[in-house]
Amino acid sequence: MTPAATRDPDHLTIALPKGRIMQDAIELLAQAGLPLHAPEASRALRHEFPGVSLLELRNQDVPVYVDLGAADAGIVGKDVLVESGRAVYEPVDLKFAACHLSLIREKGASGPIHRVGTKYPRSARAYLNGHGIPAEIIKLSGSIELAPLTGLADAIVDLVQTGSTLRANNLEELDILYHSSARLIVNRAALKLRRHRLRPLIEQLRELTNEP
Image 1: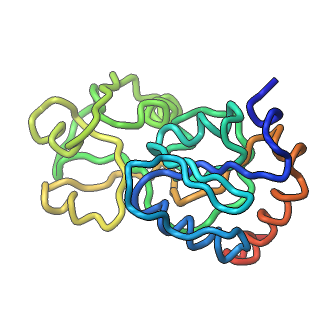
Image 2: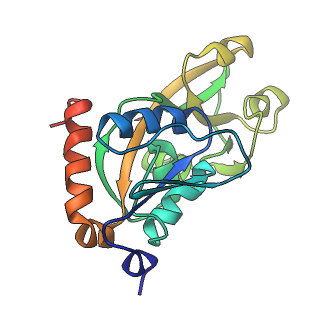
């Protein structure tokens, strides 16, 4: 039995990532009719509202909690969702936190790509395989821009928002893998168990974001 099946069917548990996405997500969910507001600053990671619990998680953990039923729904960036490989229902593009995942090299760099540094190895591997590039992928956690500048890698795959960091480090985008934005994700079992709560929420969010 999944965690979703053991909870009150009238109660929703929603997983949100810490930081700016959480603030924007709470505002949008409140507009969609959930009785939510930004929680007071504290060390608490679970926040209770009438009929709704919010779980405050790291980005990468949101798809895991939703997929395994510890949360009925969640909001997370498309980049995190793709990288997770989790089989969740993704009904709405919420159209905030927009960015894109790109293949990046130092300006003027030429020659074959033998090594790629990235926080997104799943996405990078799919792209490289699709383009017949037999490069080694190096999983990095931060300061990805340093990899091509120090010779650690010939290229990187990383998120781009404004491009200012690339320009400051003499880097340029060669190709866009995909565009990313915040997405509503839903546990497939919860969609049946809590249909009376989740379906109206999905429809309200579609209206608010002008999704078909």
